[in-house]
Image 1: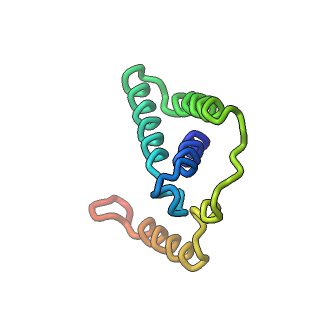
Image 2 (image 1 turned 90 degrees about the horizontal axis):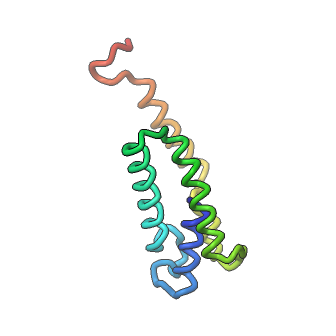
Length: 116
């Protein structure tokens, strides 16, 4: 799914979509729709045909990868802005704060729980 969403973002980027051209890949339009449609497909298949979600997800992985290869004509896309490589990179202190908050939430028992 990542490959398909990236190909969709690159298509927006090369078509001069102002949101995709702003430099931040999370601001494009198409990749969010691709992710939602793939998730909807997974959910419908799991619910309707009662297939385990891990199996459906692996199937969707192959479908999305095939679609990405078909759309890109099996070519590698080289032209992406430098900010594309910065997605998901946090400063060290933000990562430490995030881990601390998660740790506190997990350590503290929830109201009404049986943990003491």
